[in-house]
Image 1: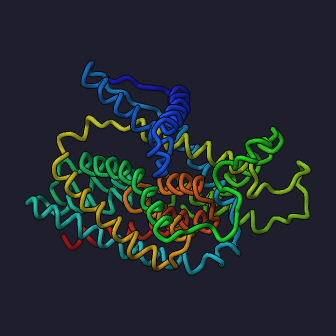
Image 2: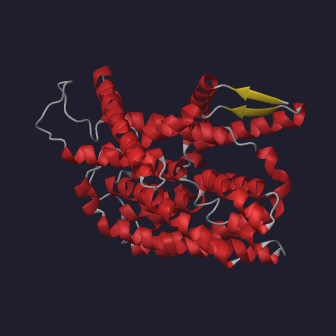
Image 3: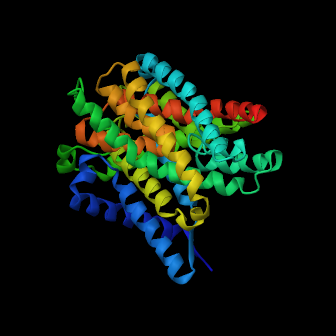
Length: 402
């Protein structure tokens, strides 16, 4: 029996999940110490609850995720608005380094999955499903490629394997980024070079001063203008045969509009463009937190039990590889500074989870140790833009080899 939760109630539960995660993190000191994001804590608690409910009653709870996808677009638009093209120039070397390392890591991730599959005497394409198809690719890429793998390589349960790996990977990514960044910060005694306003969330001082309704409305208007521009850009790109997620074009639209607008020219609202304002950071925190809470609380863990053995083995090795590359390659290559440590928190999300997971990891670490605008520009561009394009080429390349 399925219990379908409509969009309105899904959002309501997502907000409740955030509060539950906040309370649990407040009670359990090691969750705060290792910068485990609050929506991750609450989301995992609720997903386990749905699992227990299923085994007790046979009721499978499913959720309408339309509002979640809107929140994702909102969040990445705020990231774009907080950036400018000269920021990309400033972040050119870290952006290039992270991109090159991540591209190389994608090949390592696929070879790791294929090797473990062969050790279990399984079809090699199952290892690919436990590689960039599901981990760097996430649920969307798994769903997109599973039918072709099932048909061309004879893996009847390719969809279930891909979704299971993506789900477990999301969990591992959510709890890996914070501890890795904490280790690096403490090991190398790191701190931000300058004090920067948060890209996501408010400082204690900003909480005390508050954010007015005009500030929020001004930020929402700017977000909507960028989403309209991003939507038009998305249709134009689709028209020439290039497929990108809507949130990527909205992020790019935000960057472009934040670059061309003038601080001296007031808009129709009588206010300046709300780049890097407390209101924008607040909307970013709300949209990202609710998105991630809804994503994790909706996981149907009971569907993964039959596939647990080989999948756990693949993911355990993938976790070791990801942590090793993060600490011994990504961090040194980026300069062994605080920006690099915060980017490593994001790489934890890139390597095993999703772009929102990477951003949530960084937001949790930045809230504890300090912000880095550079990290919040470099990571989403690498994992939300370049990596999706690269994966679309790497997956068929490996399928041709198998």
